[in-house]
Length: 121
Image (cartoon, rainbow, N blue to C red; front, side, top):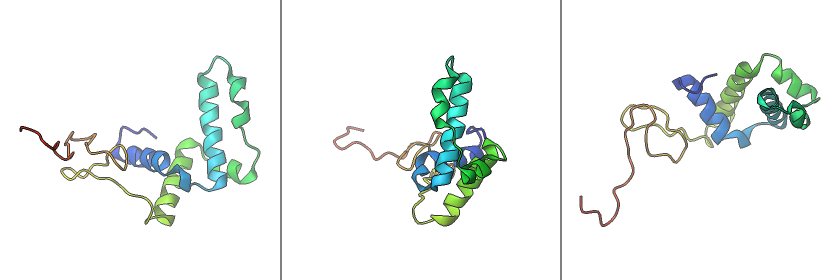
């Protein structure tokens, strides 16, 4: 799922900023997907063998491929942890910022940082 679209970015944001909310099986599957991608891009694919999993629940989660897995994990985290997931949206366009603490929009480039103290502006 491409992070360059708003939907893809939401998935990236939830997985990367709130990945600690994954279940053990989700974390094993995610690690296996990452290892497979790194192994494919590596000149030493066997270097990533330790990221493979034999966990039946993780393998079941992986069955539909990486995009389907990421979408399911995103939806489960948003559903099960609405009190712990902060979606940092731009006050101008409503786009999702890069991280929960970011203060600049990646979509419209609006900046909502507080002005520096002692600034002569």
